Image (cartoon, rainbow, N blue to C red; front, side, top):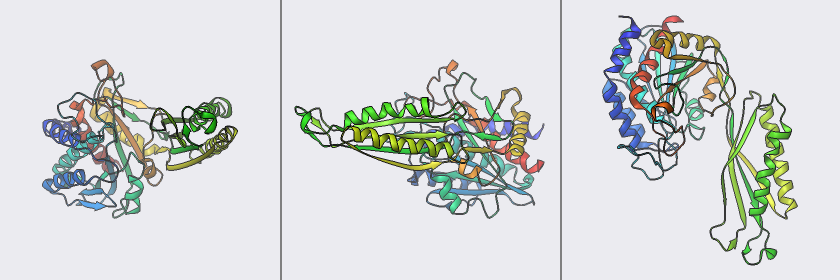
Length: 401
């Protein structure tokens, strides 16, 4: 039996245990850096396996497998935080926390890396170097990777390569399919949050002439901003900005003092040139439209996340490993702009990095909702595949370099 077959078989034996762990994490979601229960759960599990987990930064956890033989160091990363949203999925292990939900699959990632940790303990004498197991907070707000990097996660020992796995649902591909970059390039978008506040003058709904209505101005502004994409970006300039939150007022008969919209800007720029162009025009259009309607607009930008850089040599190395383990269930991914954003990108700008995507719920199998939807359900039957992939990709990287 080959090493890949052995690890996959061992991982299958963990499936029921992985589901149990995942159910617990799913029922107890926590957000941002405020993950005391999740962090303790991870540290307790690692300690039971024989690791000596350490806290890193505000709420991160790191453990090391191997180190008994000389070699390089590869980092495996799983994010732990949930989303601030109410779960609407009808499942027996539904979130017990009001307004919090693992709607992006981070509970799956944490569980899979815990499974990989158990597999790697069984292989510890064979590890040619060090495998660093990293459990990261605050991915959804693009701050967790930076915090852990600033607190030394890439050092002691120095990380030579980094790998992340993300589950996806709602695609037509069968559950268990892997989407793996087969070469290097730019993958996933930059992301930056924006907030535009339009200030007017409140008043009674029966006398709009005595007020300065910020809702009308903000509505006009929302439409005017769409012209940036359609008229100001060239055919080779990829950029997307989307308003996802719009609020104004608190009751039906009062014109409010302000209206607010929030959203994201996404590009595929390494140098941020298109990002800067979009931001400049957003500011000019916002201030101009607001002023034309006797209002004032304030534009703020925050929480920038770069695009993902896929390292060519590492991508080919990991693709080979996944092909050895999963064969026809591996679909090569071509790097390019699109999709969401991921704060693992910060790490990809510091060390060679790559990512893999595991289909955890096919639309043809009834899993019709995707990430960040309140009704999303992930098919957890693939948990063992994620654990096996983490473990085998790391072991083979250390063998092949």
